[in-house]
Each structure stands twice: as structure tokens, then as C-alpha cells.
Image (cartoon, rainbow, N blue to C red; front, side, top):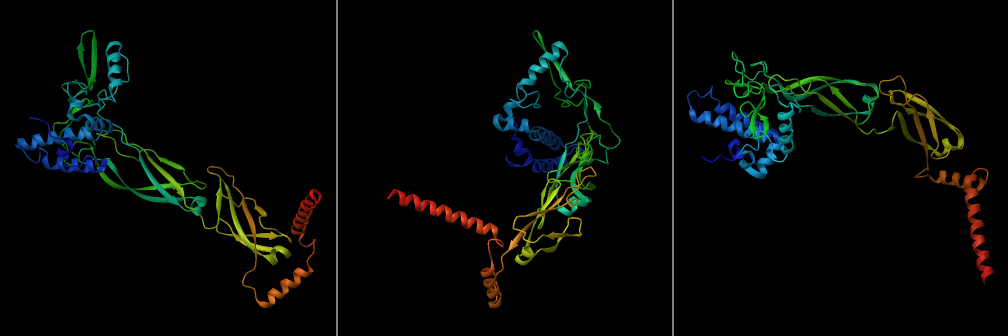
Length: 382
């Protein structure tokens, strides 16, 4: 009887996500598990069919091979009993030949049965004040944890996995072909070296289940945008009792309404009145530590002038150093003037000289010289 399409077996579309695939498998595996349907040959057949389909589609390389070639990708022994993708594992077949002759190679899947869990990524956004002070954050993540019912073995409570009779626990089988000895992944145990006759009904033999966990993350002072924090062993639980993966926290520091960050230094632009810039004075600006700092503005300060406040920047990660804070002044031109204010400014303009506005006076003096020079050249040419 021809095999059914693997996507049809699991009841998913061909473009389904990994999460959708996993959810469909778990639902069907629980429904057709032999322990729930004792003596039902049809359910037993469906359970094997579901496992076979999921074993291929959960692996990216196998799934790509199946999408391209269908069941033919795993026929005639070329795929290692539906264990390897067609094009992806072609090179490894030669590695198996050399391993069989010379005893060399990577020894992949030699009866381990325990596979390391996947690493997880968690994106977290913090504000600049939190990056300055540091914080301890509580996060909730859905992840695969060790199944409590079977303690991660994948076998039903009261039973244990058995050594694979086909490979004797090695996870690999050998076939002699002429002068060569080919070694391939065992098709019975899929390279694990063990088989489970009575899978755990809670995890369908995987040894792990999905749960939401709450973790505490320590964010040190001075972290920057893009900082990565590794929590060892807090990733997905390993398959059938294998070691867990790691959890990586990727930090994003949100833009601040007042400060711009450049490494450990902070920059801010502060508007000051025309009078303060002309006569001098003091302004008060906020600092990232939650306090305030005073900046003395000398008389005659121009737009763009910067003032450095030493040690008022960000802490340098994992050190005792601290950056600086730079205040850049912008002189604000008055708007919506009253009649009296206009009169006073007009009077001030009449009293102004090159000494009170040297930059403007010097600029327009050079402009006059430039235009006079153009006029002389035009007259000379006539």
C-alpha cells in the first residue's frame, strides 16, 4: 500500500511552522497511543505512521528533501532508512565509508540516546536609567522541561528503554559491499542505541514537555544596546534526559528623551535664553543618576558650545570607570515679542558694534571685500 503524504498524516499544511508541526504531532500521538487503545491494530498503525512522518518533517534537512523528492528521498537505502536528507548527507556517506575501513570519523550518534536541548533566545528592552543602575528582572518563557512522569527517559513509568537489538546499542549498523564496509545510522533506534517499547503517555516518549518558566535575570550596570547575557543550562531540556541548552538574553536599550549615548559618554542639548548666553549665568540640567547638575555659562556663549561634566556619564560594564556627560548649548532666539521688547531690541541693535558682535561684523566685512573685488574685475574688463 502506498504511503500517505506526511503532511496529510499530521493534518498540517506544507508551509506550517515548527510549532504547528509539533502541536499537531503531540495531539495525534496522544490520541492514537497504543496504551490508550489496547488491542486496536488500526491505532497502532496510525501511531507508527505519525511518528514516521514527524521524524522526517521535524528535521529541516529531511523536510527539504521530502518536499523536493517525496518518499523517494528515503528509498533504496540511500537515505539511511529515512534518517538523512538526500543532498545534505551525500558527503557524510563517504565519511561513513572511510570510518568503516580505517576506523576514522566523527562517531555521530553512537548509542547516546541523549541529545542536548536547543538554545533559546529572549529579547528584552530596558530604558537608559535601568542600563545605568542595573536591575534584576523576572521573565516568563515557554520552554521544554524534563518530563516528571518518566524523569526524562521517555519510557512509561515502571519501565525503562531497552538496548536496540538491531545495532546492539551502538546506534550504527554496518553493511559489507564488495571491498567496502558501509556504516549508517541504525534505522530501528534512529542512532540512539535504545528503543522504547512503552512510551511515556505524558511526553509521547520524548522525555520532555512544554511548560512556562519564570526566571530571574541579573542585568549589570553599564550594559549597552545589543548586550547578550547567557544563562547556562536554562534553555530547552535535552531529549530523553540529555543536557539542557542555554538561554541567551539580548538587550535593547530604548531611546531616551533627553540623553544620547556614545559608549560610556552621554550627550544632551540644552536651550538657553539669549540674555543668559550674552550676560552669562547658570543653568540646571538633569543627570542620569536621578540628580541634577549645575552648568556655568560664561558671558558671550555661542550656540554649539559644549561643557563637560566629568564622571556624569554611564558606568563601564564590569569596571569601576564612568563616562562623562557633555552639555551642548543652543541659544534660543526670542519669539512672540511685545511692543516694548521690540523697542528695546531695536535700541540695542543701534548701540551694537563690531566689538559686541565680532563674528557677524567680521563675516559681513569679508562679504563686502569679496563683492568689491568682483566689481573691480568687471570694471577692468570693460
